[in-house]
Length: 332
Length: 289
Picture (cartoon, rainbow over the protein chains, first blue to last red):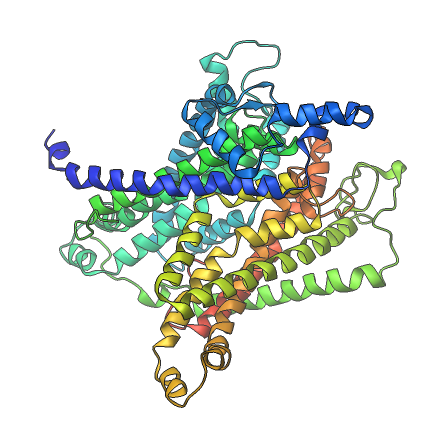
């Protein structure tokens, strides 16, 4: 594998190491911010824990609960305890899902990764095809249709797209299941059932990410079509297909592919809404459940996890950028 | 034989298409503003009027958008919902713009380590996904109008701060600023009289473009049950409460509130694109959202 050997492994590894070091203060700041917001909030975890019994409980009992939950400690102490616990893998317990937070994340993260990866691949493929078709004749009918649809989809909320997809595909035509991971009444998740259940949410998530890819590919390929190498290829009498796919697409797609890592925040935003609409048992749906029931330990852990994912995406983006354009050094 | 001709004249959409787009955007925007401003005070119909005999009727002449699960007219409810969404969206977008302009101007005007520190904070905020941070804030402060506005304001100021900072940095080096400084103008006077007027058009454009984002954010929070209280029936809340009817096969209570989010967003984007082309004719409004 000569291509693997020719990659600049050393600079890439150094850049990854530097970014990992830089990520530490960012993650520390985010965890602290999360605790600071919780400390400033009027929400009282003791009252939530005690429920209606809290109305009649004695002050002593309430104080005991407060002590047991650890919320009588000052902000810094609680943050530090959480942090040292997190380093040993103890992220606390989720009250709403009645399980340790680390177990909740472990059980669910795979489903989220499956959904997001499928949607992302689908969005890149569809976006490339539509973007190239639109760029082929800018200002033409196909271009205006694709661009207009892209703007409309960009403005459409993913939860609304998801609901319409459920109505159309699950209710109207009965082709695909409307939600969940398995058929109702089925205890175990078989590959076939999961494959059928993932189609609709992955499609909706892909469509919600699609406009960005379409518009950028269209822009990149369209600009490349006006450049000298393409003009040269045309004047040599190459077929339009060859010009489009081998010259314009290659130079136009590269900048887009290097940006895909920076799409992680939008992907997470889409997943939060799509997983909820389709009752997909991933961590994004768990985030919404945690927020609805003010389940702070789960919400805090998932926020930090999402931040780490965004930082990893940024790193991937910069690595790809350095690989695609040799003039860019790996020193960010 | 391959077609060697390339049509640069057609490469950016014809002039007629663009003016058509701007005209259509202006008409839609005017209709939306007239509807949300005039319908509630002038039309003597009650958006909350329940009519169980007429529940879940498909769109017809009497009810162009149909009726919801308790027989309320959906067209009227959409107008009221857009009014709530627009009000919250405008206030939230203004909040985000004020924060962003203040932070960006501060960073650009101070420069040096203060600039670097402020931009670190911007980077920090942009490494948490918007909607997730918004959900976290609303969850901790309980759903309500102000938590939603604060949630949008605290998550959407970043782009404005970047734009304003870049603009201030570019203005700072211009001769008229040097002239003011050598004429003895104070730091404060330079900032208010010379830098701020140059920044305002960009900040204004950012604010207008922020309104659809704010509405999007608010409707997502409201849909998740983490947004406005249920009696403030915004478009997101309408989509949420239409879920049970949708599963029974009735599509209209879901479809129309969503269209009421999309169409005004496109109109704002169309108008803002024209505005941006006037501000900066070299840059095409190809990628706006």
